[in-house]
Amino acid sequence: MARVFVYGTLKRGQPNYYRMLDAANGKVKLLASACTAQKHPLVIASKHNIPFLLNVPGQGHRVKGEIYKVDEKMLKFLDEFESVPTLYQRTEVKLEVEEWVGEEEKEKMASGSIIEAFIYSTTSYEADWLSLRCYESYDSNGDHGLEYHIKEARD
Image (cartoon, rainbow, N blue to C red):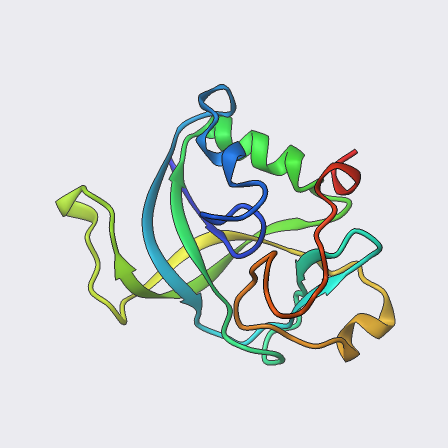
């Protein structure tokens, strides 16, 4: 089992969360809400208004999201869904736990604890993306007014 940090459309309440719940994609368990230990630019970009975490540590905000434990099948699905390695890369990042919700007592971590998990970020982006507004947290219905185009973005 691997830990994966999601910060965009795969979070609870977001357009692609249903993919995390689909048993055909693999097994998944929510462990915690967390934020990146380092700042990163989280921008909404492309004609499909996709949230991208740019692999530029030290810029932007500490990004909020969710940590999941996933099996190998789900990890493979997520790699395909995130178009690894062409659109995103899967790398490890340090996260600060905000609230642990996982049920397994042996894994439980206190708020403020540092944990490592995989994250999907990109090093391939348009030069002007660094000048876009950076977000601390992504919500497809946020006040940014940038509608995520779910069908077109993944076709």
